[in-house]
Image (tube, one colour):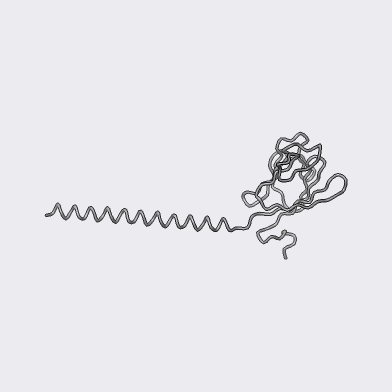
Length: 152
C-alpha cells in the first residue's frame, strides 16, 4: 500500500515538473517572439550622402539599409564612374547605434575630414570623406527621420 502511494506521488511530481518546464519554455518563446517583433518594426537607420563630383556637380542619395558599399563595381550600392575609385573602395555600416566608415584596402585610400582613414571610424552629420576624386558629405538621421542639427 505504501509503495503504491509513493509511486503515485512520484508520478504526480514528475508530471508537475514537466508541466512547469513546458510552461517556462512556452513563456520564454513568447518573450523572444515579442522582442523579435519589436526589432522588426523599428525604423531602419538612414544616412544621406551629398556627392560632389570633381566637376562641381552634386548628387544626393539617401540609404535606409544598414550597409552601403561604395566603388566602381556596378554591384555596389553606390556605383560611381571615377577612375581613382577601386571596384570595392569603402563601406558605410550601421551597428552599435552609429554609422561607421571603413576603407576596403583601396588603391588610393579613403580620407575622412582630410585625414587618411586607416581603421573604421564613426561618422556624424557634417563629416566629409573622399574616395578617389569624389567628395561625400554626410547627414545622419535619428530615429525620427530628422538630422540632429534640424531637430528643435
